[in-house]
Amino acid sequence: MKRSAIFVLLLSVSVWCFAQNNNGILVIGRIPDATDSQLYQIQVGAFKITQNAENALGKLIAASLNPSYETYRDFTRVMIKGISARDVPSSIEKIKRAGFFEVFIKIDSGGAAAARLPVSTAALPSTALHEIAYRSVKVGETRSLADIVSDKNVVLWKSSTPSTVSVDSNGIITGLKIGNGYISINETEYISVVVVPTEDFYILPESEAASLSRDSRVSESSTGNITEYSTEPTFRLAYRFNNKGERRGASGRNGGVDILGRGPDYEWLWTTYKQGGWFYDLNGIKREMINGYQKDPHNGVELTVKPEFVYDKGVSYLQLKHILRNSGNSAVTGQKFGASADVMIHKNDNAPLLRTSYGAYMTDSETNPALELMFVCESGNGIDPVDTLWLGEYGDGAHLEHIYDDNRSDVRDVDSAIGFSYQNIDLAPGQVKEFIVRFTLARTEN
Image (tube, rainbow, N blue to C red; front, side, top):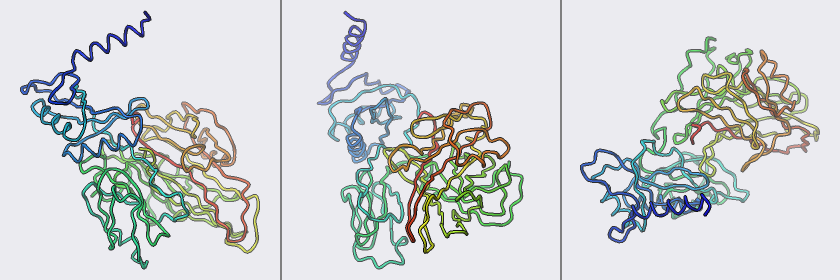
């Protein structure tokens, strides 16, 4: 008999030896003595289909349990963590009443609950509806959407997933179960909605104000320009516009937008040196972006960068939507734009910058836990593949000259930079075209 077959047989026998039927539910593992001082976790399933994991989470929450999950290969394990020994039997009983027939008990390793949910994006519209906002709501919580549409005459509110999130005639939404969808307004626009658990499942609390303190390593004095910060409370991501006059970047020039993240200790994490951000070029002319906007004075082509928080297949992203518009009266051809940044991850300016099928990523092993910055610009949901991607050395600001170049090789042990561009764009008078890339910053194990 092959060794692998013997191993599987022994594993099956060993698991069965620890399995017992407890009032109609199969319990794999040992039910601890009530005097045991250790904490336990109870797994209710490992699901290959995301929707099944979502359904399991919803059932457990409805049973007054506090579930979390972890990913293992291409499975999603759903479990309840941090259960005291004396509470294990009552938890099993609740799980049984929630409709589960098998559980697996083991000692809790002490890891925190997952900071992401395996939420499907299937409920989001594929029609030409225009997205105007994003909101999150907890299960059982109500939240008004009226402030978003204060300038509109709303005659019809409608939920795409009424069993997940409901909406009344006044624009009040109620989270019913974990999941997502959208609220349409007069069937012409929509607001994306994600329903999250009632407990502190995420790193950032809903009530936290989006106020970022100035990092002490930035020595340049502020000129008084207002800098806008935005953050989605359930995600550990943020952005800021760097406006003219602040002179943040190491080269003394400003980027149009900067991406930041929130660490496990609530410290704001950098992704560009001195929060310089991404410096944009339009048609070969470099100029500061003011609140994400610049215009080519020669032909009237406008570039607007619109940051948006999106939640796709269990991962949170900061999405940059680049909107190119021809405001002139004549058609234009061969337009191009791009951006470059002196990238870093947290305090590591020489972190490896590695090429991947979706774009590039940086990893910082010096941080505990290890962090990873992903730049998704070549493949993925909603992504418009870039025409050029340049990975190289910062070179005392020389990266600004490589925005339209292409070099997709790994960069290690140097102060690194990234450039990307879209080229050969034709626009009729008044025509608009959009180009999307995404970023995310997370712990490596997530």
